[in-house]
Length: 184
Image (tube, rainbow, N blue to C red; front, side, top):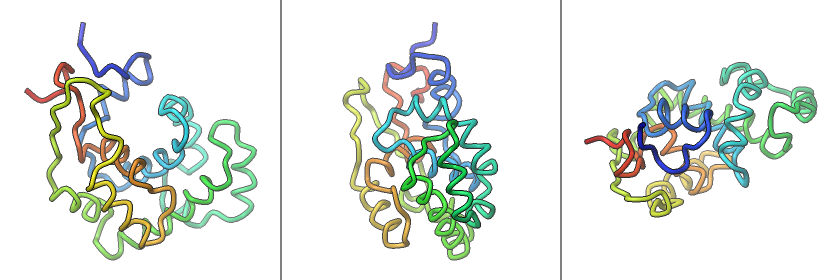
């Protein structure tokens, strides 16, 4: 039996842990997906978001940033009725706003990937934590990322959300030392 990080207990979390969490991601579409999902998670558990991930894929046109950037107030009204996502107007409006800002970053840097990974000098940070409770909720780097995103007009991108994003897309590898995903 594989030893995993202690938070990976049920099927959706185990699959996410084994296949995505901490794996370097450079595809802008996936980066946009995680930006939206991490913002939606604010104040909630990751399990809540994972269980609604397919609902988010459907509601946000499979995370097509161009389509989402053009969502109107009518889209917002429909999304507020969609039981398959978190029906929070601030978070929904944030997703639409962040799509617009994401496109601006892509235009400036060539890709969101190029912008984002610059914060870790294009190399994942490998931490060495013994147990999950040792992991920080944010770091200086996530604070810097948060501040820069906010200056660019992004919302729901505080330092804690940014650190969770960094973990999700593999900018930081926080698999614990006893986890089979920890690089040996």
